[in-house]
Amino acid sequence: MQQSRVRPQQRIGSLPARSLVCRWSGSLKFTGGSAAGRSRAGTESRNVLLDFGFTSGTLNNNLSMLRIAPENLDALILSHGHYDHFGGLAGFLHDNRARLRAGLPLYLGGEECFCTRELTIGQTQDFGALDRKALADAKLKVVFAETPAIVAGHAFTTGHIPAASFEKVLSPTRMTVGVKNGVGCFPDRLPADKRAATVVPDDFAHELATCFNVKNRGLVVLTSCSHRGVVNTVRRAMEISRVKTVHAVMGGLHLAPHKEEYVRETVAALKEINPDHVIPMHCTGEVFIDILRAEMPDKFIRSYTGSRFIFGA
Image (cartoon, rainbow, N blue to C red; front, top):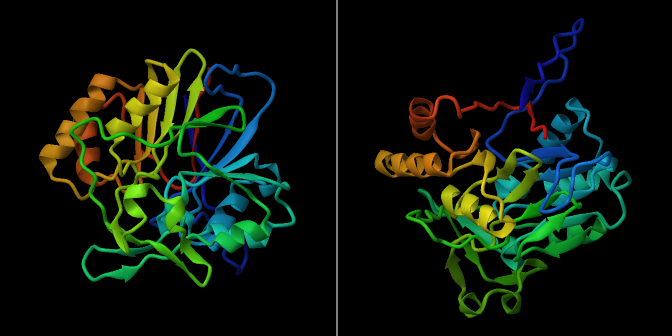
């Protein structure tokens, strides 16, 4: 595996040059001739954009700085219905509509992604809703991937992630069932146990992870946020792919809210899985990073805005 960082540009004359922007949000771009499922790496490449951050300004800026052209995207993936992962999507689609491929697929975990949400940590705050009209205006092909799906021929999504380990969902949000002024989620498209409710605590049944099977290496599991638990997520990827080796686990692990004992249990479970690399991001928390660095020093890699990882076969 190779790792590199894109360095911010320097001041040019009297004008500050643009630089990469870091926000508390999620957006990852992956390019690969790597294989998903039983497909083989070859001469073809695919470009997938996973999650879209808080704002389109940040997303567009960073894509430009990293020389990622929207017209070359083969698929979009939204991991779950939190604003810090979809907030930049509507503006990105508006600004790049003429450049995006017709019928560009957007994979997401179901109707729950569209529900209006509120933050429930501290004082209740509006947490927005995915803009259904923006997706239609951009002529995206929306694909509900509630079960595993192949993405662009090279990647796959996990679909629903079962709660099969010690891990507990700590929900920082709740979702409102229903549509108002075209915004929100349609009750009849939700799971049966949620249709009659008005407000539902988020259990993230709609959340999915994105994975690649790298030849001779194993799975690269992109967790995004791991609200369903990183151990559950990785084991789900292993189960559906029938691949027993994990090359890398990367993304948010949602361990910041948990106590140290729980975090240590998570590290112990990851040691059993024995991935070659663990690359924590976003909502992981420094407690996990400190323990991981002590317990699995040869596995730990720190990621930064603009980091680029190349997983070679």
